[in-house]
Image 1 (cartoon, rainbow, N blue to C red):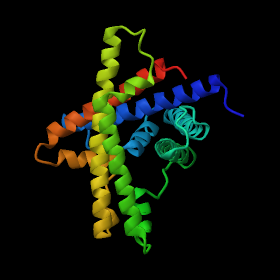
Image 2: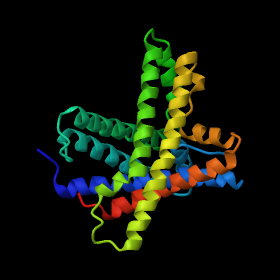
Image 3: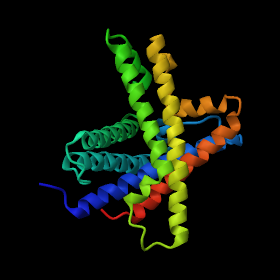
Image 4: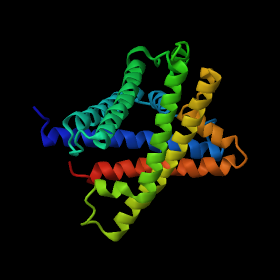
Length: 261
């Protein structure tokens, strides 16, 4: 038995609004680092930690966890029920698996938020620990390399989706004013391209971790942004990517507000 349209719509909106909040803050931290208003960049877990340390943090974490689980449930339902009618051919299967993997990643973030609520501290294990455990196996180098290949593929797809404006197909903008369409188009384009840069850096360091058999080489989103800052044109690049990620968060808000399920 499938979910009702009303339930699907609620899961979609709650999940995309929370995803928007996370990207707004990731981009905001990056921009604040550029101007010296923050000590460093941060990824999703750093954002969740920051939210939890603010006034009404426990309540905000509850709302955040609910939104993350909503996004996870929506992506899994989209994959299993094939709401986009992608089918079971190679291309359709790849898309549906990608939706499930994406949903799972946000589900783990929801668990991290719940851990903060229950114990006052996040989970002890991190991505580096997972990479280290994989590298201890005889096949671990290949597994980490495969993950890097997948991340590179995601980055390339994000770049293609942004440049080709494929995301415009996700929403019925026929009744929108030209100004509203321009805002959605621009925020989507720069947001997707910024994400492609981050995924590309993550893929690069996954390949390094595999080749050197050293989990410490791996960098997540926050560390990847720090890597940009430390380069030759670091401040400018970090500012551009930070603005792009902030724009992506805004793009998620528009999508949540106006897309019909």
